[in-house]
Amino acid sequence: MPIYAVDVFSGSSDNIIRDNHAQAVIVKATQGTGYVNPRCNHQWDLAGELGKLRGLYHYAGGGNPETEAEYFINNIKNYVGKGILALDWEEAENAAWYDTNWARRFVNKVHELTGVWPIIYVQESALWQVANCADTCGVWVAKYASMTWYSWTLPNMSVSSGAFKFLTGYQFTGGDMDRDIFFLDKNGWMKLANPSGGQVEVKPSTPAPKPVEPVQPKSWTDSLGDKWTEENGTFTTNQVINLRWGAKTSSALIAQLPAGSEVKYDAYSRHDGYVWLRQPRGNNEYGYLVCRDANTNEPFGTFK
View 1 (cartoon, rainbow, N blue to C red):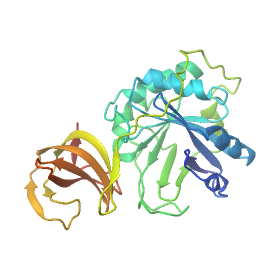
View 2 (view 1 turned 90 degrees about the horizontal axis):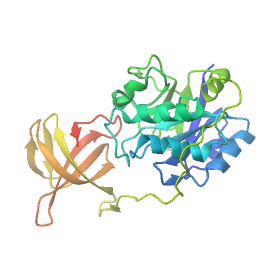
View 3 (view 1 turned 180 degrees about the horizontal axis):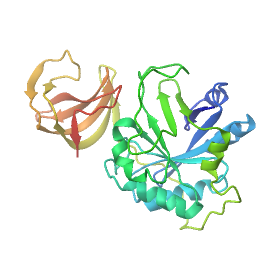
View 4 (view 1 turned 90 degrees about the vertical axis):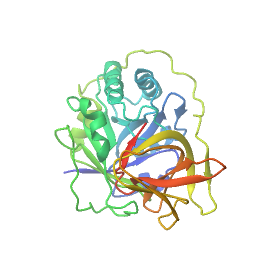
């Protein structure tokens, strides 16, 4: 029988952990090399008190992968072997996004330190970035039927496992909570957590740096109520895209950009079904264009 689960972070309500549908709880432990979830121990203990299977994940910051792996394990070493380990590979706040060898180096280091292979959480459209981990790791894929899917009923949609032989887990909602299904039983879960079945010995590594608050990118809310985050980059279109005077599909048109157009941008916003980019144009004026479908995460070009 499959296992239904939730994954939580510092801002998650305890009610999510207590949800009777969830048989397992995966807790965010660390991010980069400067953040430890201050509620990690509480969330881990609460899940255990409720008799639920457990796991811990590290959110990739995109720094040195071996150093991040050491930081993760140093901060959870007392829990290794008691729950599955996972790498959260996402674009936001990840300086190594598109680096196809980063996850491989991270999981290798975790395995070196613990004897455990982490599973890898990734959106379906980015499976190619972690494909070289398919020989040793399980994959936990995120794909939503809707960004407002508030249900424990699995959506009727296909989900790829990419280079991996099969899906280990599938995150099928965001919205009010991250709902997941894992295609294994309790024994399979614990086999991922502790492959040897014996006492897990964590090898010593370099001392973990003292936790500090990560530097957050500047963000703001505009006059229309849309939140923007500062980010500098270049977006190259792979299709015709409208450049507008505002970040709305109803805003006046500046130009139609043909496929292959390069746009330098300084901020992004996720709203109204799209991810929008802001293009500085001089004289304190800006152009705006869509770069991604916010529901499926399908990009309309490439980033650098």
